[in-house]
Length: 77
Image (cartoon, rainbow, N blue to C red; front, side, top):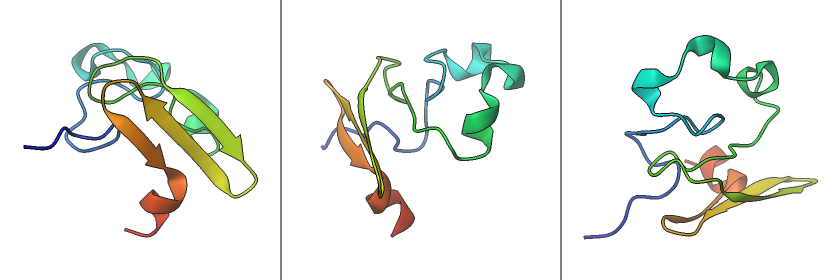
């Protein structure tokens, strides 16, 4: 069985707040994130802060427990 990635559904934590989804209010998500201008900063599986690298063509984010996700992979699904 493989481990779920940082942004694999179903998410348990908010990727912009790190809060458990049942505790996160809609107002907690930054406006830039709602517009798609902000990369995720927290792992959706464990809520840990991810290492995020923003590039001219997108971003990549790495959780120490759940691996790496690249924005290019998300756009080509």
